[in-house]
Length: 238
Image (cartoon, rainbow, N blue to C red; front, side, top):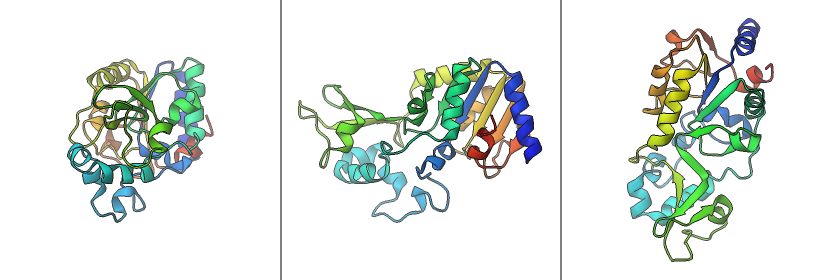
């Protein structure tokens, strides 16, 4: 494993157009639960399956139930960036990392100092009135009692991509361009089983593809380097 981490360090040192593509595993070391592991949200017991609660239809038809779950499970304000977030921000400041593409909605990359972040699934930090489009921050939403309401009386919706909703075309396009231009693509903390996000890896034409994940992924055979280790252990060496 140490040899693989040294090899990874060398690839980072030799590359000048790095793109990082991360999933839930990037934030678990900050204490944020993932979705699909044995302790993840999808394996906990609720009145409705989490996949149903986090759907557009459920949000519209059962808004109060949606917000009960959302406020209990999606509030990332108390969490802090971990070593992976911090090291990625440092690589960006040095001009080596050109973009972070994330499936996470917690805003921890920005909290760590990353500027060029493409959030495929939106962010809990941004919220909008469905009626007048007025913006509300996360503090307003998470401190509300019951369903958050706008001053105009409209219901506030998190700028988060729910099931049945499509990804933001602008964010998707920028992510594809970043991956196409990268010389090193680091894919980390994701099972690469959720589409269309996992399909982004197919746009990579660069020199080296590195996969860092605790478990095997469907794309391991295509990678130049696979590291089955926690992200913290790998990134603290950078």
